Length: 219
Image 1 (tube, rainbow, N blue to C red):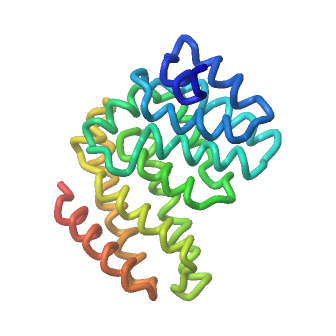
Image 2 (spheres, helix red, strand yellow):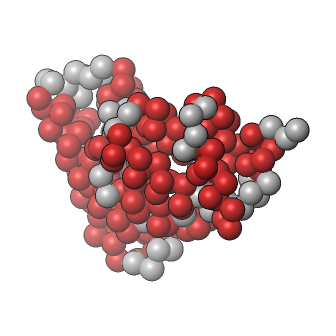
């Protein structure tokens, strides 16, 4: 008898409904196994699965849906993936990721928001998400006098890592080459503001490096 992982790895975009049936079931262990296996699947199109989890989250708002979405994002878009391969996967899953970007603040788990930030540099709408996300981080740092707990520290570090990948080339690949040229100095100023506001050494170091990179590369 095949395991859940074997079953999911044998599916593709045309049989994603089989994965959704597993996620809709009562066995949470099976659901975890299913989303983990998506990262090993040949077909990386998971648009309808992302959409399904978002719809369920909107209706139920439970931690399990967030956890499954977190595992899916890490499995299909692993942090270790190089930019070119990541961009290819994002292009295939443009619809599902666009749905994620509509409201990245909906999640209680800040780790998911950090994972979403990683996908932003390759999408027009993602650059706008980085802008609004950066402004919110500035506001949070002002309210907390520059102090951050571990979860928010990790979120800000993920944000800065994402902004580092914003270039005219990456955003130009989306068909809007002028967007990055306009946004580079703005994002650079946000990172510089984060540097000036934070009391965390790791955030200060990374934000200064990223701000210099963006402002120097401003054309």
